Length: 229
Ligand code: CTP
Ligand code: MG
Image (cartoon, rainbow, N blue to C red):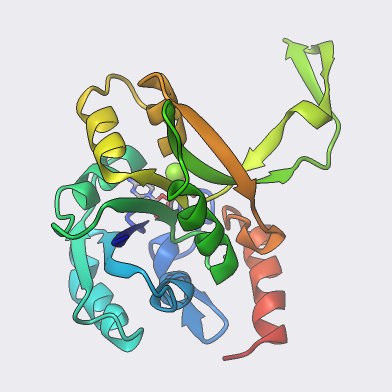
């Protein structure tokens, strides 16, 4: 099985309010994107790593691929206005040998390699009618449905999960789902579901959390302090 991982890193990081695009913001000694590449470089089935970045960061991204030991298998391309446009830019340069595609947020720099492995393993066992596998974690807060200011209902927490990345798909499935696409979606599994296929879950990891705000960055810094490489 040839695996391609598309790392989307072309967002601006509006909510983080740093002075560089979010994926290029350091968490301790290294940027989020550099950290995100580390588990990817450890995957035995890796055929290709594609990083999708802002136009003025291409060369920097290429150097990061090289430093991660991915020079021969790495590719940096320019992203688009929305996350989905950046995913499309990555899909456009898939290597012929890639038959499984993982899409991963650079903004989840501490995602352990075991999560990638679980997703790849599960994609390898998809049956008819199943189109992808995504890592999930339980939701800890009590969830309420609201109608304006008023609480309308309590959501049964056992029935919901928070979804992380990498999200994995057979190449033909994610390519076809994106070709038929209308409207915007926040995750790739949603696109495949819209195309009428089931998406299955695997166990995610607390460390695969997404860095969105300064508070999240502080949490990332605490992890860096634990493991300062
Ligand atoms: N992303 C991307 N291209 C975009 C928008 C987002 O490649 N046009 C990537 C981000 O770089 C990030 C991931 O998608 O790794 C998840 O997006 P998000 O956390 O929303 O990052 P940003 O869009 O950069 O942040 P914000 O929404 O706060 O501006
Ligand atoms: Mg965003």
